[in-house]
Image (cartoon, helix red, strand yellow):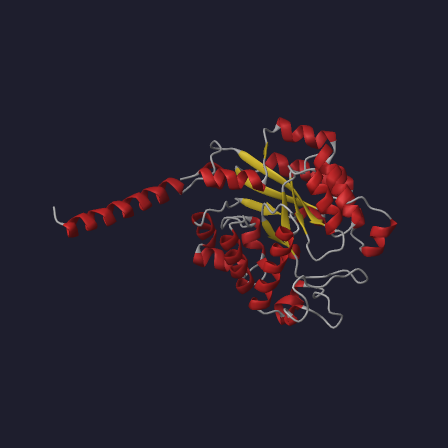
Length: 325
């Protein structure tokens, strides 16, 4: 057999193997592709906004130690990052990622970019702080400055010795603009740090009409991320922020847990111990306190067990993705 024929056969075999892999993956949840059995419901209860304030640090620590929270993410531009880092160093098993932050949304409690105003001028307002809302970032920010700032946040965390198991986006800013999202994907793949991204049927993929959903379905970015060696979620939602009281949150969380579909799902909360200081920062104290209360509620914890929910972390997702050939 000639060398040319051998090369052709090799190419054909490679195409067949690729097609076979695509067929096998079709119809499977990402949980199954990560090695869990068919029908498995795998969940991360994920607490955001660590490092923003002492009350958030304390509430989340208690929800990790005595509740359902399995994963967290840190806002690197914020003043209580050193305090949270001390907790992480004392508890190295905690699954900590970065809540990549491009906004500074509170009126009297604000922060600027990690990269510094001269390095990312399109991301700061007249006070030299990050813009107050997502629309402001989209209106003024450039993709180059966005990428420069998220790299600075990652590099600062790594330089401080902070564990970084994953990346996500504060207020969804990176999910609301296709150019920003593509930079986020690029950086995650380059650093080989898992990023919050869902398949095309996930909540995040469909929340931002004309933005994230469009590029995910058109360009198959979720599969690009998977093929680059990073895990992908089946679903993720932060809808609990709209549930206000403990009673409402408990009822809705229990309903959500019972109705969970197979796959890997991230349920996002903001566990905070509300006090007068936090109320001076934000009016969101009650809903954040209720998140904490539900995450440590014995009935909710028991329901997770009774429903056969498998709890996981981003660290485990990456280890499982590394094991997939």
